[in-house]
Length: 131
Image (cartoon, rainbow, N blue to C red):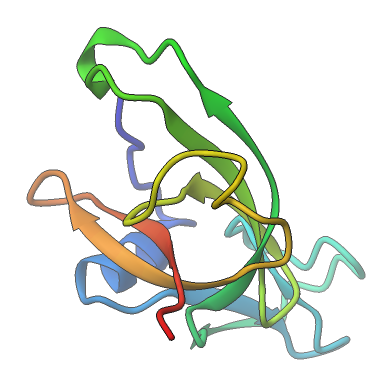
C-alpha cells in the first residue's frame, strides 16, 4: 500500500524521487511543517514555499512491529516518528540497524535515505548517523 501523490503533495514525492527531502514553510509566520498542505497549520496563511530540508533528525518515538504484514517481509521493523532538524515530525521507518530497543535509542541522530518503490514513489526512510 503506497501513497498516491496529489497536487498538494507532488513536490514532496518529486523531491524524494530526486533524493531530496522537501518541506514547506509559511512565509508569513516562518513555521516549517509536514505533512504537505496548501496552507500553514499554525496561522492558516496560504503564503507558503517549498524548500529542501537538511534530511537530519532525531528518533522521537517508535514501536517495533513484531508481526509484519506478509508484503513487508518476516523480520520485525520499527515504525517511527522522527523529529526533523527543521522542527516538524514525520512518520517513517528506521533502516540500516538492528530493530531492537537496545539500538533504537530515543534522540539518536538520524539521516534520511531514500528507497525507490515504483517509478512514481520513493519513500524517505531514516538511518542512524554513522560515526
